[in-house]
Image 1 (cartoon, rainbow, N blue to C red):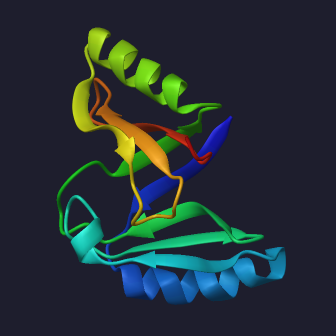
Image 2: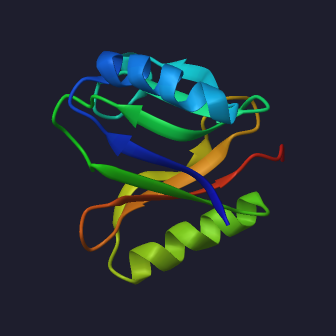
Length: 129
């Protein structure tokens, strides 16, 4: 199952204003903002979702990195580790070794790889150890 997706936009602030209005009737709102100091490419990212869980992300990533990010839900941290090893063995490029990402929330454990087309693919577990 998908955990969340992310896309790169030309102007994150303009997109934030658009999505705040466009998604409100669906019960989807801005849940989290991640500043440049916590993004690999140095741009601001906005996470929209519901019930406190952001699942649609976008940001202006300063022209760097993948334009598409897909995160798959993992049932355990061991699955995240296995995903990372398998993806590298399949020819993926490491884009973030398995490990905690407390800047997102306590208990966030993820791993990132670039697929053959340069898409940023992640496996994430939200459960504490």
